[in-house]
Amino acid sequence: MSKFLTFILLAVLVHSLDAQELKFDSTMTTEIELIKKIKPKNDYKNWQIVTSYDSIIYITGKRFTIPKDSKSGYLTLTTKQSHTFSSSSSCYIIVQENEKFKEIRNEKSLIEFIGEIDNIHEAILILYLNGFYYDYSHPSSYSKLNNGYKFKTTKFHYCPNKSEEKVITTDKNGITEIKSNGFYKVTDDCYTIE
Image 1 (cartoon, helix red, strand yellow):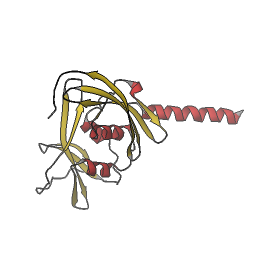
Image 2 (cartoon, helix red, strand yellow):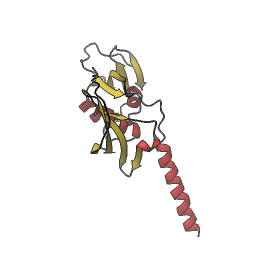
Image 3 (cartoon, one colour):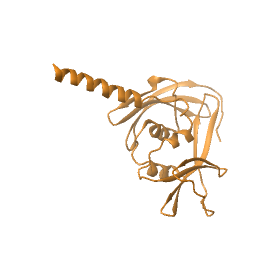
Image 4 (cartoon, one colour):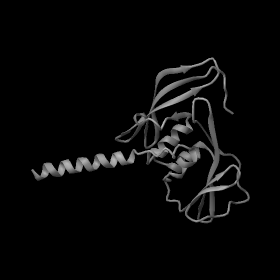
């Protein structure tokens, strides 16, 4: 009987840990907030998020001065915040390691910086990098899998404007499967996002 009771208690504990991990705070919907949740693959002590205006908006470790010979280019992540308006964030990450600097300014270097996808925030960031909108307001829009996550997302197409539901599966390495559930909103409108 005690083995059975131990098994039940462990099952409840594991289930509650999964449920806690899936709690997604609605304030974590901007790209900048998602980037703050990155657990880099290397144990970088000092890294910062810098906006396109050279404002430091997030610091891990010690604050450091941005080198004058900083490169150009920004991580520009566009997400659809509603069906009619979008928002774009332009930023980059700069890492200080042994008096040297490394800049993360494009999707490839960001994915290398992240390494394995360790949490739901990194998984959603990968969705945004690939142009998928995740609707955090519907708890049924995602589920935790053994080795990743499954999301119901929207892909927006322009001229004519239409919305396509896509089911995206991720694992520790990124997106593993994309399945279309078809278009659900088609208009004759022709809005473009710059």
